[in-house]
Length: 256
Image (cartoon, rainbow, N blue to C red; front, side, top):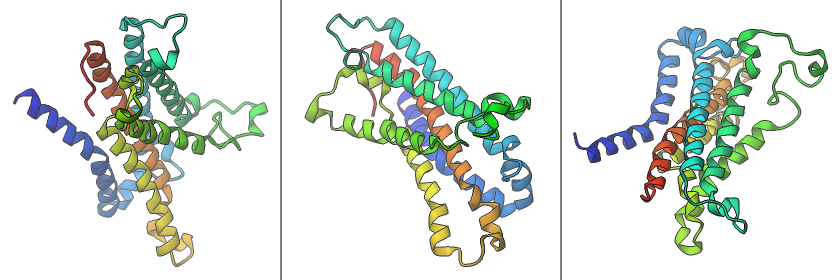
């Protein structure tokens, strides 16, 4: 198989990946709800089940790939920032990838409460008044909303601006950090799938939530599905960054 056909197959697989994950989740619950609740996702045991484990694994792996790409870009880019230069102009791609790497690592750490989930240490007394676990996403600080807006900016706004680059000529150094189509699509699927919970609650849920078994066992935990799909998107972003940096350093154009 030539590289062209192989590349198209990989791109198609990347587009299909988030949809396949959703169908797998739906199919597992429909076919074997007890198996789904025991091993895939259930509110009281989710930290040790498949969805949470996949979320953490994808996020930590994605952050590693981003750090590697950022390091290569910084060390091998022969276009140094001069005294009158600007970091975002001359090394914009590095900035985007490095910030994404740190944000993704933070996301991975928050998923396991920075190790508390598996190592089982007690929450420090001074922190218990803020959160029952050593994380920020369970505190009054609205970390999840901040994270959502950050993802929107990086995966939707920035690629949209880049697509219109003929009108305003952004710095070429940004190109290694721009998310490709499959990555953008995967993140969009994560956000859209989350909306199903809102739609179900508003238009379909016509009895008390506790009496709706489908809602309580499956839909109520869709936020965790969304986080897993977002983590998969971040892993894809990290993998794509390795090839994007290689092309950029070789002087080749980015593939949209």
